[in-house]
Image (tube, rainbow, N blue to C red):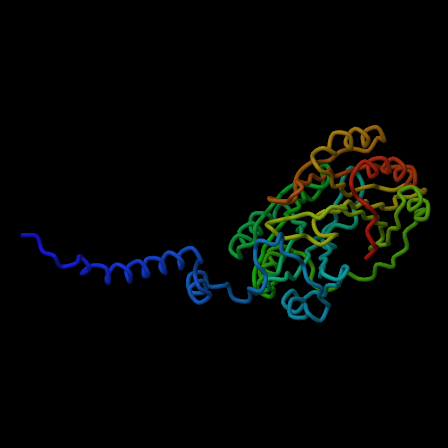
Length: 336
């Protein structure tokens, strides 16, 4: 005989189970709690967590020379601010008498920038001028200190002694550690320690004429005259917005060689679309092309650099350069 008792024995237990499942599903959809997220992915030391990663590239923050005192101490070499957010340090290779095509080339040296970012990390980027006899030791030291080499090439035609430029890149929470790695790489060369001396040495060139021809104001630097332009768009490297004047500049160096003539060296920065016309214009102006390459590994837009060589009337060379500059998305940089 069938029992007449209502079938209610299982109902009380089903409701709690549904509630438990709903709560668990809600937790999964909501994602980890702040405490569990911290446990799963601890922030590197010195990194701030106040900025969600979905808001675009990480931006540089303003700094002052005093903020980089420990970096200067580690390098044993003074730096200076370039704008509000770049600490730049130059290292002259005044130990090397570099001769190329019969000319002693001045303004040979290394230059590195330090930039502090809003996530608390520091970018170190630049180039080292390295003699060929020093190169492999320097490469090993950079690798030992986790400093990435992003490009290796020459800026000059056949020269004595042979000289290479080693472009470097590193990011970390401790700028002093980055500086110590850089110091170790420099110590693997004969690069002199200490300041490079005054930039006020006389330059026997029509600098006003050079300025007019290029539509920009340059500056004297160790016996040469340097005119610099910077890209107008923001360049992103490894998800970080590079401050203007960091890794994306055109720089022309006019070195007096007598009789109002100058030795022209330096480089011009371009996007891929700008390369063909720029090279064509340079050759039309009888400016020799030394090399064409990248300086960075993950820059956006992708940038190319052409290194130059010419000897002639300084103002005439500047006039030949002007259409090449005008064909690229750059504007004059403030003299520093």
